[in-house]
Amino acid sequence: MSWYSKIKSKIEKKDDSPELKRGQVKQILISEFERELPEFNFLEYKNGCYTFENIRIINCRNVYEHLHIIFALKDRSFSCSVASRINKNYLRSNSYNTGLINRHVNLIVLKKGTGVIPVEEAYYFHNGRVKTTTEIVKQIAKDFKKFGKSFLQKQAKQFEKSDLLKTGFHFIENLEIDTSELKEKMEKDLNSGGHLISSIKNSTYLKLKSELQNVKGIDRDTRKNIPKLTYELLDFYANGK
Image 1 (cartoon, rainbow, N blue to C red):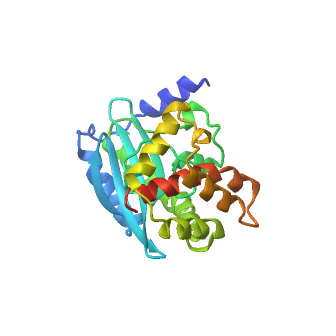
Image 2: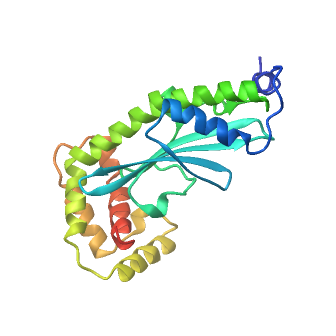
Image 3: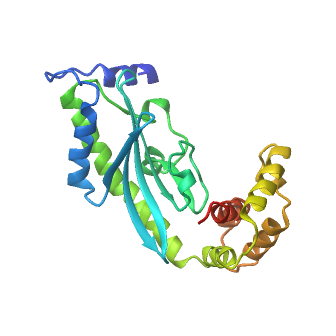
């Protein structure tokens, strides 16, 4: 069966329930999430995305844990993601982020354990009717509970225990420079360097990056994230923490 046929079989699945009305999915989501994920409160519906939020306080900082569900009635699909962020400026970003302190990943990627996913498996498909859509939402809630919460717990542990993050936060907590000037210099470097983080040559950035690179016991994959972490820490500082 082709990928198109697989998708078609899902979105054309027959059931005897009424057609879903616009806005009805919100109540289905809230009902199922209250049952499976009671610590997450419905936050908002904005730009086609339903967001549920839990806020952890770790080392006196708010860590915003978000479950995002983009629902398409016409296209018969749900796109779901989970995020753990400290920078409020990232909270409504649709962009995925593989960084360490504002991470945002696709739920199915977490579930499958790989970023290479066939198109017919990349979304949660529904048929536009109440019964089947409710069943799909139940599955989404269970996947958030099993895979999303596991991801968030791992992120929380990192905020609590990581020597790399402790070093970075200690640096910005003791930093006393003009935030507007810092932001302007970093943006100027990014704009002139094709928005590559490697193009940032600001002295504060280079100093923090060097300190982070000197932290011992960091695995290779995490070490690759140090330039991005340096930028996101300073961006967090520049935006008032």
